[in-house]
Structure formats: structure tokens, C-alpha cells
Length: 296
Length: 324
Image 1 (cartoon, rainbow over the protein chains, first blue to last red):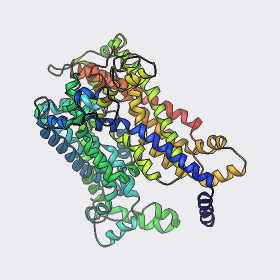
Image 2: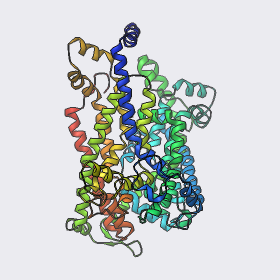
Image 3: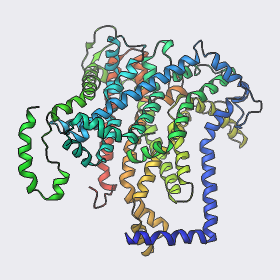
Image 4: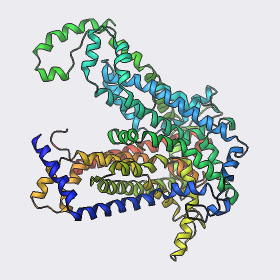
């Protein structure tokens, strides 16, 4: 204890006083900002280019447009490839929202059982759950597709949403288990003494304390499901169910300059929810990654 | 519900005899009725998912890998013919080559970038939180179709990168249409998303006790020496964790290669990722048996590589005394 307290002040004081370290600090900031500018250039260029006329986009490397126009957005709002932008936005939002609800519901229940309840198969089940985090989805892809086909669900949102209600994203189970383990057992015991069984302990003690873990789960469920191009590509073959990601795919085969404008405008709109989530919850996002090793 | 009845007596007898530290870690089994039953109630969704969407499908895909199946007629058992076909399938080997190339280049470079930036940001100055979030941002955006389309445009013929290189005298044309360079467009996109491992590295760097750096300074070690003798060994469990994660992810890369090559893996199969070829076999050729076999090859390949990394970790991952 004593050593920790002693160590900090002199170092801070030293840093503030010496002029050399002020120079170093400025150099450090300039370097970091330059790196950041390089790193974020593609995103800035995307945003700027969405306001450029289509003919300008490919060759103009400047972020700011020479000729500013809103036409690209107007075109997108009128519809892309015969599909309504608003329908695609609605589909994406619906799928992601249901994915969040499903993950929060099913992963919380499973995590509570793993973290707090004793049952015979706990160790093998928990080990299995951990293994499924690493399992490439391709080994279950085709039989899952056949199951959903037999159930007549191809072309609906169900194959994308239903698995979330069955805790198939084991990563979140693990995340919440780790979080519950950090909640003092004394709270559970107090509830037990007051006569609460596992259901009420979960409902009144554990669940209300899970907010930080559930925020992390919500954010990542939403974003991963939003960006889950592969599953959407396979299951959503009906144009009425197309998401923004699938709408964007339609631009891949069009390489004429006239398509660049709407493509960039729609790209901006498609990443906007992710950017908003990031802006609002960046602390939770970054801390979530830091503590649990979430892939980004 | 009846099982729980004999438990309280058991714990009531043994609990007082245990040393206090152990007693607090190992919970005495209290007589909550129906706990075993309650556990399975809570686990119901997970159990259904695990049985119907994981274990069942795994067994089914293993079986399908030994069949000829086109989704419309019944699967026909053909033994190991699918696996034998792979040996003579040039596109299969292209896919293997492209994927291994990508894993071997993209994963280490991404980790190097992540570590370098983490070390840079770890020099705690003002605004660290801001930089951490800002450098992390591409990690979050990189998985989207939108960013893949941006990359496709940036690296197209007469695009920004092509034009930029022309002004300094390198006139190579667009990277996207050049089979020698097209994969590197995807590698650069992967490196661009170094944010997630960087954040994990930063958290790891903060865990290294300051005493070790103080001791190292007292011993007269220079910066480089301190880095190799203190930072790297102390950080090695985190490096290991990130490496496993990134390698597993890299094996499964799909979206960017699909978008940048228009779903075809071109030019001349230079961006034909394993997963892209698997998708092509399964959902455009409806060669479900072959695709299932490919999925199992992927699983085994990932398993072997992960096992190798785990094996090698004994030589280079250092766990300090109190942990493990």
C-alpha cells in the first residue's frame, strides 16, 4: 500500500516540470493523431464521397467533394434495384432487435444456471458450451439449413432469429457467467434466508445486477446480427426480406460510375446504426472487449 | 427434487470441520429444494439449442460428408468419395492456399499492429481513453459490407490507391483486378481492424506490476532489454490468447472476399477463401455432401492449428507464479 501511494506523486510532478517531457508529449500526440487520420481516412472518404457526384467518386481522393450533392441520398430513399430502402432498414432493425432480445433472454438464463446452480451435468455442459464458442459455424451450417428448409422457414427471418432464443451464441453465456461470478454470494444467501428459491433469487437479486453485462451483450448482439452477411445471404432469398447488407450486395455487380453515388450513400446509412451505438456506448464496448476478449 | 433431500445432512456434518478459507470457496450445499430441477429449467433454451442446432447438425454434417446430396433427392452414401475428390480438385487447393496464405500473413501482421499501438498508447498521457476508442473503431466497422465496398472502390483500377501510386511513379493498375495483389487488399482490411486485439493488449499491459519495471531500471536494463525481458514474457498469455482468437477468425473470413470479388473469389481464384468455396459448393452448386466434407476439413484444420499453438505455448507462454 505504502509503496503505491509514494510512487505516484513524484512521477507526475516530474513529468509536469521537465520541459523535455512536454515536447515528448506533443510529439506523442501529433504522432497518434497522424496515425488516427490515416486509419480513419477510408471512413471519412466514404462519408465525403457519399456527397460527391458519381463520376467524381472513384478518382477523387479528397475527403471533401468538389461538387456537393444530396442526389445520392435522394436516389437511395427512392429505392435501390426496385427495393424500398425503408423496408430493408426495417428488416435489418427487426432482425437485430429480435437477436438482442433472444440473446439477453436465453443467455442470461443459461448463465445463471452455470454460474450459481449445482446440477449433475454442470461440468461437462459448461465445457461443451466453451467449445462451441470456438466451433466454426460451417460444420453445422448445412444440416441447420436443411432443418429450416423442412420447417418452411427459408425466406423468413426465423432462421436468423430463432437460434438466438436458444442461446446458440455461447459467447454471451460465457460473458454473463463471468459477470455473475463477480456478484457476491452473500446476496444470494441473504435471499435464500429470506425464503427465496432459485427463481426469485434470479429475478429479484441477480438479474437486476446484470445491467453492465447486458449492455455489452445488447451492443454486440445488435452489431453482429446487423453485420451477419453470411446468414442473411443464405436464408433471406425473398426480396421482401432483404436487409441493408443484402441491398448493398446488389451494387457489387454494377461497376458503372452512376452506381457509385447511391452505393456510397447507402453504405453510410448502413453503418450509421453501428456508429451511433459506438458513439453512445463506447466505454462499454471497449471495456467489454478488454475484459472478455470479444472479437470486434 | 427428491435428490436434494439427502444433501443438507452431508454439508451440515462436513462444513464446520473445514478450514474457513476453504469453506467460503466451496459452498456448503444448502437444502434449497428443486435446485437440480431449477437448473434444468434455466438451461432449457440452451439445451434445446445445443441438441437441435449444434450436436445434431454436427453429427448430420459428418454423415452428409460421406454422401452425395443435392438437397432435393435423398442423400446417397458414397463412402469417402467426397474426400477423395478434394485431392484432385484444383479449386479446393486454391482455396486452401489462399486461406493459409491469408492466415499466415494477416493474423501476425494484425497482432503486430495491435501490439505496437497498444505499447504506444500505454505511455499514459492525457487522452488515452479517446485514442483507445478511436483506434478501436475500425474493428467494429470492418465486418460490414459497406466497408468492403469502400475497399473495393479504393483499390479499383484508376481508384484512389492506383492514382496515388501512379503519382509516385508506380503504375501497377488496380489491386482488385491483379491476382498477385488482390489478396493483399483483404490483408490490409484485416490489419485495419487491429483495434480489438489492441484493446486486449492494453488491458494486459496494465496488469504488469510496476515493480518489475522498477527492478529492471535498477538493474540498468535499457528500453529494448526491458521490453524483451519484462513486457514480452509478462504479456505472453495475452499474446497467446489473441493469437488463437485471430487465427481461428482468419480461417473463417468470408464477407470481405465475397464482396470484393463479387462472390466469385477472382481474379483467377486469388481471393477464393475456403469458406467462399464452401458457400459456392453448397449454395450455388447444391453439392451439399462435398460442402459438408469441406466443413469437416475446416474444423479439423482449425483444430490442428489451434492444438499446435497450444503445444508451442509451453515454450513461450509465461504464467507468473500466482496465476495458474
